[in-house]
Image (tube, rainbow, N blue to C red; front, side):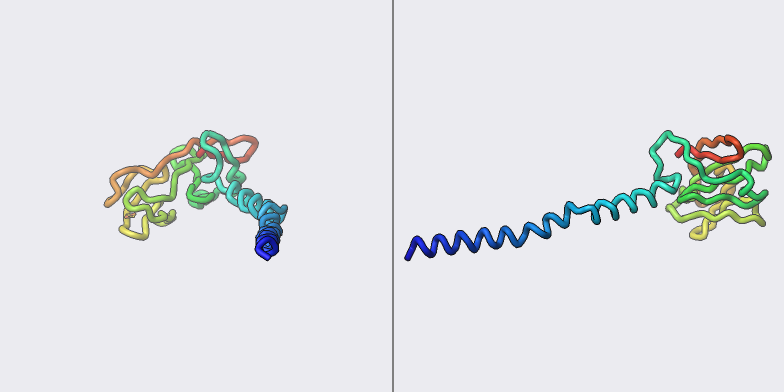
Length: 150
Ligand code: FES
């Protein structure tokens, strides 16, 4: 009798383990892998998510209006007001407390909505409370396409 009880408990234990097997297999299925790779693909579309030191396309030069930046993730790209043939790329993260700055055509400046700091197109501080410039990124133009290294 004792041996039968032991066998029964042993079988129940195996049954419990077997019931966990399908959920473990689902965790390794293609469905999970696919959703992870989809997330990775979406993130890699932004310049901010590209590996450091690599140039990533942000769009065509023709997309850049005189005072209209291209926004790619947390990076703004706009024509250099001092050199029409060149482009500038700066972080949109305010150096004061981290709010997202917005380009204001009327002021020709990035303005922070949180505490009203102002930055020039090249990220230089025009007005506080921020005391550090916006982070700048290297840019290049090839065949009419704009690339940023972030
Ligand atoms: Fe931008 Fe304070 S967070 S001015």
